[in-house]
Amino acid sequence: MKPEPEDEPPQAQEQLEAKPRRLYQAWKGNNIFLCGGRLIFGPDAASLLLTTFLIIAPTIIFCYQMKSKFHHSSSTGQQHMHRAALVIVIITTIMDLVFLFMTSARDPGIMPRNTRAPPEADELLLGSNTPSMDWSDGRTPRMRFRRPKDVIVNGFTVKVKFCETCLRYRPPRSSHCSICNNCVHKFDHHCPWVGQCIGLRNYRYFFLFIATSTFLCIFVFVFAWLSVYSQMEDNGGSMWMALRKEAYSFALIIYTSIVVWFVGGLTVFHLYLISTNQTTYENFRYHYDKKDNPYRKRIAANFAEVFFTKIPPPMANIRSWVGEGALEAGFYTPYIGLDVTTPREKIDLERENKEVLVGGVQIPTVLQNIDYGSFEDSSEDKNRIEGEKTVHFPSAWAQGNEGAGTSATATTACNDETSEDDLNEIDSPNIASTQASSEANTEPPGEGDAKENDSSNRTAQSPGDMIK
Image (cartoon, rainbow, N blue to C red; front, side, top):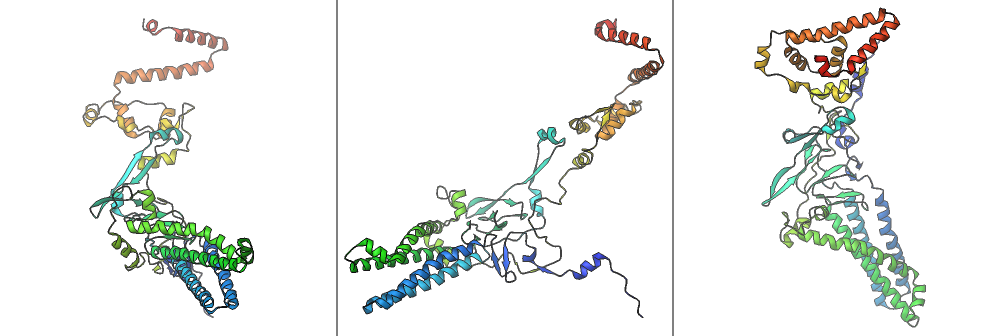
């Protein structure tokens, strides 16, 4: 019999079982990917079903009405009119749904992410301290900001900001969508009705979608009124009788008159934005209608840029293969896992939970983190007093300084500044206090009380009397 192979370690088994993944499977954004990453939806793609229903439901009602009128029409002209209206509405509805799908399921211009900040971003790093926070957590936090860069666009200076989530500088006209959690090139807005961001690669289809919806609403509204008008002629000009017999037309009139205010107003607004070469984000954020717009061209050139230029390929190849562990799924938090603390802050973090006692009294955290290194002597002073004796601190105070994180250079400086006379003055009270404490433990209670009264009287004397 062949010997059984030894069990492989868990890490080796995981490496054998690990399979390469595509980028969309490890993407950190909130998008929904279908068909192997070929279709990209936003996190609120469920609203797409509601939008589709609002388009299809009135269309079905209108087609049913036109078909019934086609069969009941007495003249050939009315039959041709109803048939043409039916065909136009069906074609327009199909186009509207296609534009809706291409807007919602298309990459709007998602920009790739970086796993680490580029070196140029670290060079433009700003650090600021907030000493007032010492009193809350006992240490000085550091906030890190990256400065925006200036870019020249058509002779205008435009500031580009650093995205702390995607770890890259955003190109001009780009912004980070908080809903999709992606940086989108030429970001316009996030539309909840299509469940997707509107950017460089789907803005054309978005405008065609709202323009087709506006045309569909107006067309249905007009033909619904024509049906009511023809019914009025058959009922002696009574509006009420005509509306009762044309219930479907009356419902379509109310529905389209409400919807056209939204899609029609949105179409007019985006016609203005296209003519001035703005995005919705730029119009509300930078107010280019009140100041110079670095991207504005002639009106014809602005429309040609939207409708007659080639749509660029995706910047992020979502279907590309990535190595195992290259990216982790989930939301990214800036600076997680990166060491952004200074060496002194590391010491404070290790010792902030320790209880530091000096002579049985706990030292506040604020006093523990004082930078005693700023009191260091110059090299000349150190050379001058290099041979002098050091001061022997009590053991409790030495332990307290050690636990509190007092720098060794500050202790050396304090020792060097002490002369021999000061040494005798410091040592003598310590010896005297030690002898007094031992005598107090052996003497009778009465003598101890008398000595306490005597010491209290001496303490009450003024400094001048003690000198005398």
